[in-house]
Structure formats: C-alpha cells, structure tokens
Length: 298
Image (cartoon, rainbow, N blue to C red; front, side, top):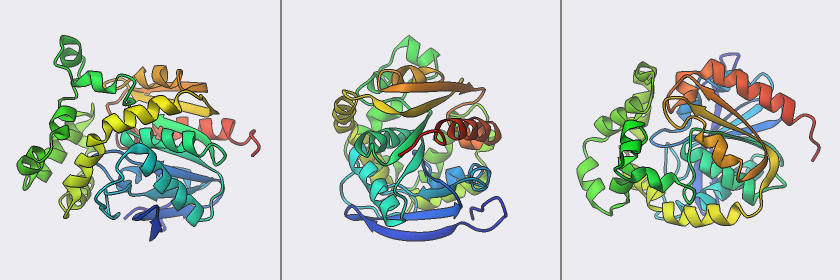
C-alpha cells in the first residue's frame, strides 16, 4: 500500500487511454505532478517520495503501459506512444498542466511527454537515464570503459533478441529482478522485501516479461523519436539527477543538448534514487519545483 503524508492510502483507479488501460494511484492537493517509474519496477517505486510531495502537490503515479497492474497490449511500447498514454491519463484526471518526474525508462518517456505536449508540461525531472539515439546503445558494447566503469548494459542486447529471453526468464522472474535491482544500486539493502515481492508479482503475471522486453525492443524506434524531438529544445526548466555509482552526471550532459534551462545534481547513490536516497531526492526535487514552476505562468 502507498500512502500520503497523513498516512491515508492513495486513491487507485483505472483509465482507458490511448487504446490501452492504465492503473494509477493519486493523492495530495495542489499543482499536479506525475511520477513515471522505470524497469523492472512499478509505480510502487515512488512509495517513499509520494508522502514528501503530497503536502504541496497533487501526485499521480501510473503504472506504465504493460507494467504493474496496467494492461499489457500487444504493441505501443515506444516512448512516444507511452508518453501519449500519460498525457491522456492526465486529461482524464482533469489536470491541464503538470510537472513530470521520471526515472530510468520513465525519464525517457517523461522527456517525450514534455516534447510532445509542450503546452501541458511545466517542468521535467529526469533521473538516472540515458537517451536511445544519444549514446545509450553504446553501453551495450564489451569495452574496458563500460566494464570497468560499471556501465556495461549487457542486458540491452540480450533483451532485444526475440523469443530467447522469454524462454530463459520464464520461472526465474524473481532471480532476474532481484539481481538487476540489487546490482545497479550502491545500497542493495534498499531493495526491501516488500518492493521485490511487488515487482515480482507484476512481472510474473501473464505478459509481464513480454511487455518489459517490448520496451527494450522499441529502442531503435525511440532513438529516432528522440533525435526528432531534440531538434527543438525544451523551453521548460529541467532537473537532471544521477547516482554517482551509475549514470552520474551523464544525464545532465545529455539534457543540455536537448533543453535550454538545465540544472543537475548527483547523489552518492546507485541507480534507484527514490528507493536509495528518497529524503535527499525529495529535498532537491521540492526545491527545484518550488523555485521553477511557481514563477512561471501558463
């Protein structure tokens, strides 16, 4: 269960949007903020951050297309389509303007959301992600730099191959998810049993691994979408966050080619900031949102 700052459970629902159905949670009051999780996680990833935001913001936490308790359609796993899912969800919930916080794949989708719905998104927090089309794919290579620097993303190539990953992962979802989450963190104990159970529950459901792999298999489509979107820089404030033991300051350097107003912060952490250093992350995010969004007019 996810709760707000008063200990009240978040409201939950489902919405038919963009040809699929998204499960979402919402809580709080004030300007809207949508939180987009990455892989292999669900909206539960944000359980520590939500109570720190709800005193000032209306928080919307969807499970992305195919993930969590959202529907698992056969297609539509490119970042632009998944961004449009979220845009329609926010319209459905009555939020005309909102800030976006994304991490991992949710950050890339959040960028596409900001690029495709420029009149709606007021600010973007982009945490611990790299862009397909701008060097992400390079980290699949077996090089000394990737291996020694901890950024050999071996699983990207593995997941891209049709059918074989499904065969090998089936029945071993717990082992894969536990390994991936713990190996990418500098604080592996922050992968608490409740979170592991929730992630395994969702990815082990029918279609769960297929949907996850479909996101990776759309990378070449995403790459072209990102290159097209980057031709027009974002005008909104952007905060790029990294963990020193994983993406680090690479997120900020990439965003500077894609947005005019970029700030950055690197935490002493690994890949999953909202679970490893939620208090520190909340402080930086709240300061950014308070300074950047309130002085801007629609």
